[in-house]
Image (cartoon, rainbow, N blue to C red; front, top):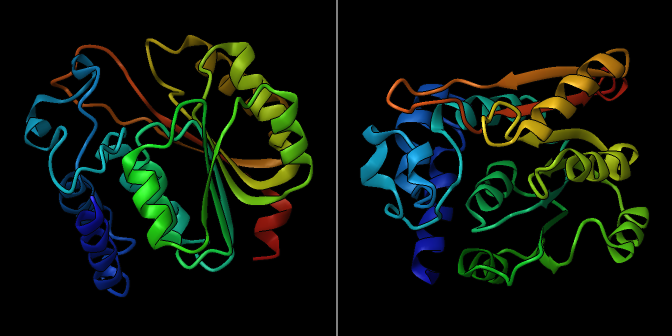
Length: 238
């Protein structure tokens, strides 16, 4: 994994000035080549099967046709996003790519209730601004951590129940400029869908909302989906 992370960093550095915000390149070349998730394959498009657990082994648990557009949106704020928190990093592919895409950052923290994955561990060793916390986002310890910190960007992908995502969203709402929700369009995550729909209505005066919910025809059902809430007053200042 050490050499894979080095190669990954090299690739991102080489594309930084040319293809960093080009959706077609991100979707069809970069993201698959880094390696896609190899779990819950019934939710994965067959045409990308060569990349499940392959590529550089990052095991990115994202649809390239969603994640590419999300990264392109973030590129509009590159330079203004200096800190990143990901709640529920799992294998760490999404975390590593987001960090490297926005690099250099001042601070990036990966959070999960499981032990640190090999990807996160190696990426942390090679990236000075990265740290990992094994912690439950619904714990008092995590609440104290949030209250002591502020992040420009927070990605919520932890407990996918309605109460779980609501907890993560509400305790971090005033601690970030961009709040991102994963699985807003997933048949197996109705709680996330319901909460996302709710905040779009309740906070429309506070945020600009973006959705990336493209699907693959080869997959039966709807899965994943990324919802982004960007503070309007923060946009005005950037």
